[in-house]
Length: 288
Ligand code: ADP
Ligand code: NA
Image (cartoon, rainbow, N blue to C red):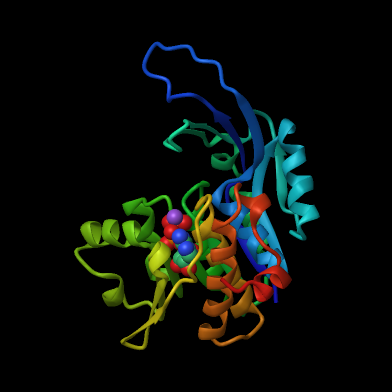
């Protein structure tokens, strides 16, 4: 089976600064590290690292060619990533000596993916394939609807939280993935907890507390591994990608969750986003 991920691709520019700049301040950074990020790209890399067959649907600008090359080097099928005029998605991340950060995101080409490109790409999907999306692109609502019509199983990682998008996608979703903060935002927006949404599967991640899988009226708790976190960026994305790859392989959810928990715990011990996502062999060998 194939996993189809309509998702963002960002260059993460991380600047180390003595303190975070205030309004009107000019400040020289001590260092710059550029890596691959964006929730969509992170999840695609996690799927591929987990051994899944993943085709990413997205767009970059001409200067973003290195990101497409890097996705490909991690095993992602990049044939449905377009190159458009204009800047690629990117994030300017300032980190100070106390590890406080400040993040500016420019969505760029991530929000300019043509609807016709998404439809043409999904036309090659087969019933039973998995479709995945988040909230960092455009057309995710229409794409989820069209994937559902084609008989795909729809997984939705509702991040960053967007009340309108969530309410539009929920009726088409089979699996919803949220962190604790997003679950609370959903409760505020809909007046309902994740268990009462009528979805067949909901997974709420709880950071160092692990995760909860809501299924068949029951709550299944999965504890996290105990690690010393270095950088929690992309923990949830790693988790989601591994869960999807596991389901796509036909594994039962508890098995998929166990490996996802291992992979995301290992991720938080490493700095970086997509580039720091562990391979399946690394995840399987990791014992905290
Ligand atoms: P997000 O990155 O979307 O906020 P979470 O922080 O809930 O997501 O993390 C997703 C998963 O990653 C958790 O369910 C857990 O299994 C793992 N994880 C996150 N933070 C830690 C941590 N400090 N120690 C161990 N595992 C963690
Ligand atoms: Na987190």
